[in-house]
Image 1 (spheres, rainbow, N blue to C red):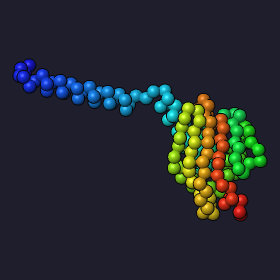
Image 2 (image 1 turned 30 degrees about the vertical axis):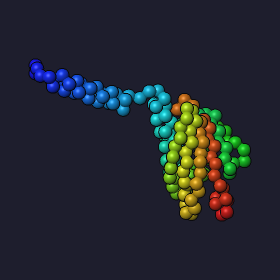
Image 3 (image 1 turned 135 degrees about the vertical axis):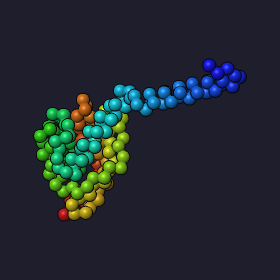
Image 4 (image 1 turned 60 degrees about the vertical axis):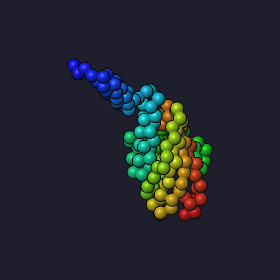
Length: 151
Protein backbone atom coordinates (compact mmCIF):
# COMPACT_ATOMS: atom_id res chain seq x y z
CA UNK A 1 0.00 0.00 0.00
CA UNK A 2 1.26 3.49 -0.83
CA UNK A 3 1.92 5.61 2.20
CA UNK A 4 2.12 9.30 1.67
CA UNK A 5 0.37 12.41 2.83
CA UNK A 6 -1.18 12.75 -0.69
CA UNK A 7 -2.42 9.14 -0.92
CA UNK A 8 -5.41 9.62 1.38
CA UNK A 9 -6.87 12.67 -0.42
CA UNK A 10 -6.25 10.97 -3.77
CA UNK A 11 -7.93 7.79 -2.59
CA UNK A 12 -10.88 9.77 -1.20
CA UNK A 13 -11.20 11.61 -4.52
CA UNK A 14 -11.13 8.36 -6.50
CA UNK A 15 -13.69 6.75 -4.22
CA UNK A 16 -15.92 9.81 -4.44
CA UNK A 17 -15.69 9.79 -8.23
CA UNK A 18 -16.49 6.06 -8.31
CA UNK A 19 -19.51 6.65 -6.04
CA UNK A 20 -20.80 9.47 -8.24
CA UNK A 21 -20.42 7.31 -11.36
CA UNK A 22 -22.22 4.39 -9.73
CA UNK A 23 -25.11 6.56 -8.53
CA UNK A 24 -25.35 8.20 -11.95
CA UNK A 25 -25.44 4.80 -13.65
CA UNK A 26 -28.18 3.63 -11.29
CA UNK A 27 -30.25 6.75 -11.90
CA UNK A 28 -30.04 6.50 -15.68
CA UNK A 29 -30.66 2.76 -15.94
CA UNK A 30 -33.27 2.17 -13.26
CA UNK A 31 -36.71 3.62 -13.63
CA UNK A 32 -39.45 4.03 -11.16
CA UNK A 33 -43.02 2.94 -11.83
CA UNK A 34 -44.09 6.41 -12.97
CA UNK A 35 -41.34 6.62 -15.59
CA UNK A 36 -42.15 3.12 -16.81
CA UNK A 37 -45.84 4.06 -17.07
CA UNK A 38 -44.94 7.17 -19.08
CA UNK A 39 -42.89 5.06 -21.48
CA UNK A 40 -45.79 2.63 -21.97
CA UNK A 41 -48.15 5.53 -22.69
CA UNK A 42 -45.61 7.15 -25.05
CA UNK A 43 -45.39 3.86 -26.98
CA UNK A 44 -49.20 3.73 -27.23
CA UNK A 45 -49.26 7.30 -28.57
CA UNK A 46 -46.48 6.55 -31.07
CA UNK A 47 -48.36 3.47 -32.30
CA UNK A 48 -51.52 5.56 -32.72
CA UNK A 49 -49.70 8.29 -34.71
CA UNK A 50 -48.07 5.65 -36.92
CA UNK A 51 -51.45 4.02 -37.51
CA UNK A 52 -52.91 7.37 -38.59
CA UNK A 53 -50.25 7.49 -41.33
CA UNK A 54 -50.53 3.89 -42.48
CA UNK A 55 -54.13 2.95 -41.73
CA UNK A 56 -52.86 -0.16 -39.91
CA UNK A 57 -54.26 -0.08 -36.38
CA UNK A 58 -53.20 -3.64 -35.47
CA UNK A 59 -50.52 -2.37 -33.03
CA UNK A 60 -52.90 0.08 -31.33
CA UNK A 61 -54.52 -1.19 -28.16
CA UNK A 62 -57.99 0.20 -27.50
CA UNK A 63 -60.21 -0.57 -24.53
CA UNK A 64 -63.42 -2.35 -25.50
CA UNK A 65 -65.47 0.74 -24.58
CA UNK A 66 -63.12 3.36 -26.06
CA UNK A 67 -64.78 6.67 -26.94
CA UNK A 68 -63.86 9.11 -29.70
CA UNK A 69 -65.39 12.58 -29.84
CA UNK A 70 -64.13 15.20 -32.27
CA UNK A 71 -65.15 18.14 -34.45
CA UNK A 72 -66.18 15.90 -37.36
CA UNK A 73 -68.22 13.36 -35.39
CA UNK A 74 -71.92 13.61 -34.73
CA UNK A 75 -71.68 12.75 -31.05
CA UNK A 76 -69.33 10.27 -29.46
CA UNK A 77 -68.26 7.10 -31.23
CA UNK A 78 -68.18 4.30 -28.66
CA UNK A 79 -66.65 0.85 -28.84
CA UNK A 80 -63.43 -0.59 -30.21
CA UNK A 81 -64.87 -1.77 -33.53
CA UNK A 82 -66.70 1.49 -34.20
CA UNK A 83 -63.67 3.64 -33.33
CA UNK A 84 -61.34 1.50 -35.47
CA UNK A 85 -63.76 1.71 -38.41
CA UNK A 86 -63.98 5.49 -38.08
CA UNK A 87 -60.21 5.90 -37.79
CA UNK A 88 -59.63 3.68 -40.84
CA UNK A 89 -61.82 6.03 -42.88
CA UNK A 90 -59.94 9.06 -41.54
CA UNK A 91 -56.55 7.48 -42.28
CA UNK A 92 -57.42 7.09 -45.96
CA UNK A 93 -57.11 10.87 -46.31
CA UNK A 94 -53.90 11.19 -44.28
CA UNK A 95 -50.52 11.52 -45.95
CA UNK A 96 -48.44 12.26 -42.84
CA UNK A 97 -48.64 12.99 -39.14
CA UNK A 98 -45.76 14.98 -37.67
CA UNK A 99 -45.77 14.82 -33.88
CA UNK A 100 -44.31 17.92 -32.27
CA UNK A 101 -44.87 17.14 -28.62
CA UNK A 102 -46.30 14.58 -26.23
CA UNK A 103 -47.40 15.56 -22.74
CA UNK A 104 -48.14 12.73 -20.32
CA UNK A 105 -49.68 13.26 -16.89
CA UNK A 106 -50.79 10.08 -15.18
CA UNK A 107 -53.50 8.42 -17.25
CA UNK A 108 -53.98 11.54 -19.38
CA UNK A 109 -51.89 12.41 -22.39
CA UNK A 110 -51.88 15.01 -25.12
CA UNK A 111 -50.24 15.01 -28.54
CA UNK A 112 -49.59 18.20 -30.49
CA UNK A 113 -49.00 17.50 -34.17
CA UNK A 114 -49.57 18.47 -37.78
CA UNK A 115 -51.68 16.26 -40.00
CA UNK A 116 -51.02 16.49 -43.73
CA UNK A 117 -53.82 15.35 -45.99
CA UNK A 118 -53.30 13.55 -49.29
CA UNK A 119 -54.34 16.81 -50.96
CA UNK A 120 -51.48 18.66 -49.23
CA UNK A 121 -53.46 20.58 -46.58
CA UNK A 122 -51.69 20.80 -43.23
CA UNK A 123 -53.99 20.79 -40.21
CA UNK A 124 -52.44 21.54 -36.81
CA UNK A 125 -54.19 19.58 -34.07
CA UNK A 126 -54.08 18.62 -30.45
CA UNK A 127 -55.39 15.22 -29.45
CA UNK A 128 -56.11 14.33 -25.84
CA UNK A 129 -56.11 10.74 -24.63
CA UNK A 130 -57.00 8.78 -21.55
CA UNK A 131 -54.98 5.58 -21.18
CA UNK A 132 -56.16 2.87 -18.80
CA UNK A 133 -54.44 -0.49 -18.31
CA UNK A 134 -52.10 0.29 -21.24
CA UNK A 135 -55.08 0.74 -23.59
CA UNK A 136 -56.50 3.87 -25.17
CA UNK A 137 -59.84 4.50 -23.44
CA UNK A 138 -60.69 7.99 -24.73
CA UNK A 139 -59.67 10.16 -27.67
CA UNK A 140 -60.58 13.82 -28.01
CA UNK A 141 -59.05 15.63 -31.01
CA UNK A 142 -59.15 19.43 -31.24
CA UNK A 143 -58.53 21.17 -34.56
CA UNK A 144 -59.97 23.62 -37.06
CA UNK A 145 -62.02 21.39 -39.40
CA UNK A 146 -62.45 24.01 -42.16
CA UNK A 147 -59.57 22.74 -44.35
CA UNK A 148 -61.10 19.26 -44.26
CA UNK A 149 -64.69 20.23 -45.03
CA UNK A 150 -63.99 22.69 -47.88
CA UNK A 151 -63.67 19.84 -50.36
